[in-house]
Length: 410
Ligand SMILES: [Zn+2]
Image (cartoon, rainbow, N blue to C red):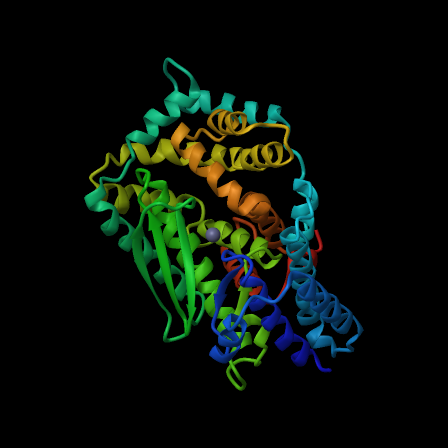
């Protein structure tokens, strides 16, 4: 069988696994008949799906491919290995946090010692002077940059327009591309991009908790431009679509969430914020455009930018909390307390994060470690802060390629 044949069977397998886990199929825009077939009747038994994934792994491993399709084959193998691991989990096999991360996302998350977080907190003490704990001072500073509910949409739309414009200067996007923002409640995530195919996304923003100003570019750039929306649109245009526009690689019409593709997706979405808004440009845009639009004091923008750079370090606290909690070394209250101390979340935010960890488990590494690995890959090839054009070029290369974490060569 050709690689195209194995790819077709892979898509059908992912859809079949989706019957056992509603979170698994994040996006699908291939032939509707395949989805209808997967959804007809009762779900295929897990043991049968395990046998199928073994058959596909053996088939793809044995298939000879031309050099230009080597990355495509590696992609299929990596995704299939993750499907196999996810099926094992669905059958009840227990994985440690590190084993699960490696099986699903191709990386073993390093441990971050508490001393690293303590050092970041000590630096934050300087940025946020005053009485009380640094956690309390952080929350007070954050309260000064909360976007009033009636201004949230205007701020988001302005951020989206700017991020889109900056991205369009660098890459030719499909003419049909667009995305729509919806406001929702009662979710464990703060925002989510649902890719619909045909260059369109629906981005949902969770309004359960107050929205701070730093969420504006997270939403516009991480979920939108040049993040998830652009990543999905480029993969569809360059791979999934039939020739001559694309390559007719059908495996790109489905996106299984618990797979190595997610590390690239989240890592590039996070790193994309500073690719689109490098150095002082983010601060300038937030201070001069978004803060006034939200009716907030622009003088707060500068300090908040300094806070954000330490938050990059503290983002790794999610991995430690999730590892401790999922491996049974921390109970729920202990994990929430860890997040309150080291990721500076409010108790309500920490509780929301624990609900996210309950559902998505080791997926949390894709944000912080994913960003770190993507940055390292781009910088290693000269895409540094001092070379913004080169950085854009490498970034776009990564989000329009089948490359998985193993292929980063780090
Ligand atoms: Zn994301």
